[in-house]
Image (cartoon, rainbow, N blue to C red; front, side, top):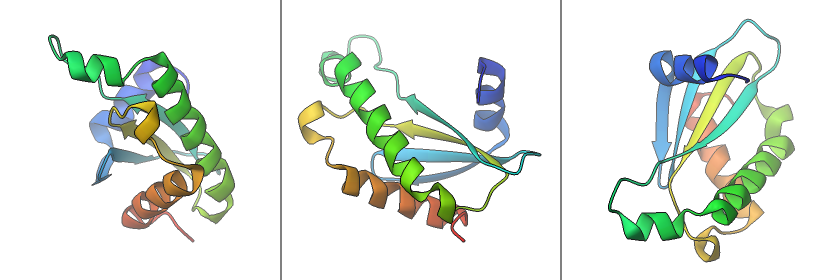
Length: 116
């Protein structure tokens, strides 16, 4: 997905599924494939612990792990949806492995009924 308006539409009109540390927003599109966007909770003003936990390094690592986990399982998903994954701030040391991210995404996709 490209553009703020498409992402806002998924947040506004999409169905929401959540688990520990992440929320998945799902909205049907008219395409034969899925489009995904990774977004992150913003640290609120004055929240020093969130700001230190959610720096550029940790956001980029979370994005890379999420994209790779999605790439490995996208063939097992039903097509035709816009997906926005909203991730909670976690320090790099606590982000886990690719297999843990895959399990997290699989549980969210199962809740959303997107697994074939």
